[in-house]
Image (cartoon, rainbow, N blue to C red):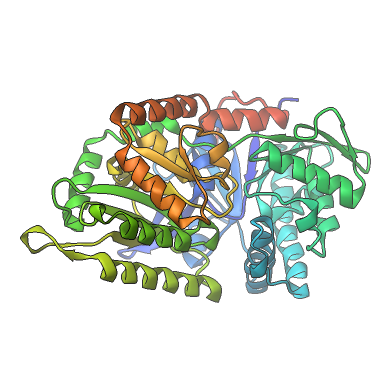
Length: 491
């Protein structure tokens, strides 16, 4: 089935409006979802429905809550949804981020369940459904829902629009029945998801575990020929379940990495850090979330400088830490612990270098960075370290590879990240083994140039063939939407 319009629905908006120097400015948000889907909608056209936050966002939209984006060269429409403080506190921060997020990442000691969270999560999904259904009445479209915030949305859409194709991509891991049974509303969540025509997961393992949950808790019928890529029948409705790992815009990163401003940014970074000639670099780019394994990474770097003192003064690890969910006390405490641990390591090993400059083993940068600066970090880094304790995919690993135009760097990636299944020429690490990570960092720094280039070249070739456009095409193909449709006019 081919349709002419595409509607993307997510909690996070791709663009936000903020006051800068007294003027209302539209800025692209960061994060894997935006970096993956914004280029796709710019190419295909359509509508993106997302949560709008802040008075500036309200000022930017018309009576229909719609604004055209990107600024300067509009390619699609952004429709903003407004959530009540109660739904934000209990539905988004509560059920989505204190229940579903830790549950799916199997950090069960961090699950903080409250019965009141569920009612607000339902209300949040109803709010999104009202916005989607309003747009569908105006313009029939294929609906592509994203992630764990909106698990009930496929059913709410289908109840009002049974003939419209609905797909959902689940960005984070999916646990097996032994873990998912912890969720009191497990049957309601599964029932909401199985109203979709297409459910797509990051890996075949996650798709299979979802299938097992559907069979175990709902007694849904499963196509026995292929548990990881088949059909689930529930209440007479057929849902195709498949796996398509999300990717990045390879050409944007690869071509951007050689821009003159990136070369300048690399020089500025070296001067700002005060690195002496010959100092080598590692890079980590993460949201300040416990699932990214930042604290365990710091312990591993501590072990590295202790076990291999010959690298003291000759290797600096740059950690870009982007604050997230700062409304939650647990995340504020985690951020404070990261800062304290970095300071402890720098006090322990840091020392005066040449010309009075002080060498620090870890350079911590908190906050967002621009795209050119990000590319500069990726390109100049001799190694990138991804140490997630559990991750659906982790696009940092792919961004680093796509930016490595010199093919000189080494990727170290957690066995618990979905990207490890694709980027098989990376050095695999166990985030729970600090000594093992320390040894892997040493191995990366001492890897012969020929091996480094061979590994990186193979990963870059894979990413070029399996980029964000291939991911979009695969997901839309499963949803019955033509992936090569021409961009629709937003005028």
